[in-house]
Length: 124
Image (cartoon, rainbow, N blue to C red; front, side, top):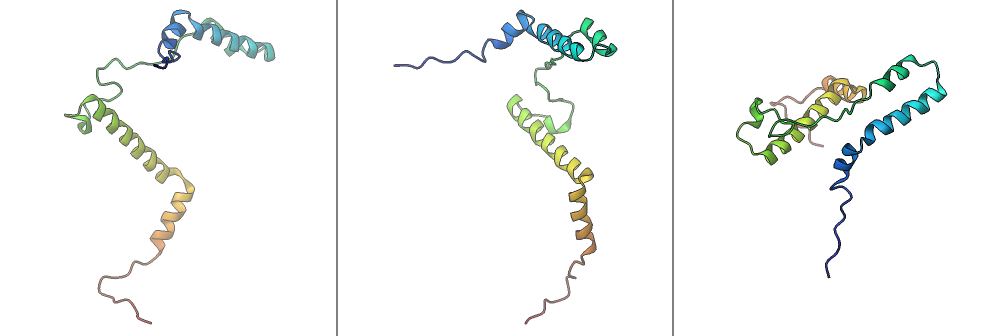
């Protein structure tokens, strides 16, 4: 006996878009906000300009920019994996640049003297 496959995620986006649920939900959220803060001019203006903000890639390769050298000659799946790797590298580099705890560790490493190549370790 086969199990029934759930269609929850399969057609939900198409239904969400076709019934314009985004606009309805955003309008309700803004109306709740205006009920709490009736003098908010920005929210009143936003109520008239509700747009769906989801961006979808127009390129065949998805979010990967084929002009970047790292993606040259890769298939779509490999290019997506490479994009994830590059994203992780950028994240680690940013942590190294801006995270105070990482900077403290780097300063401690700079201040410690590295053993010279010619010196032999002391035996006890």
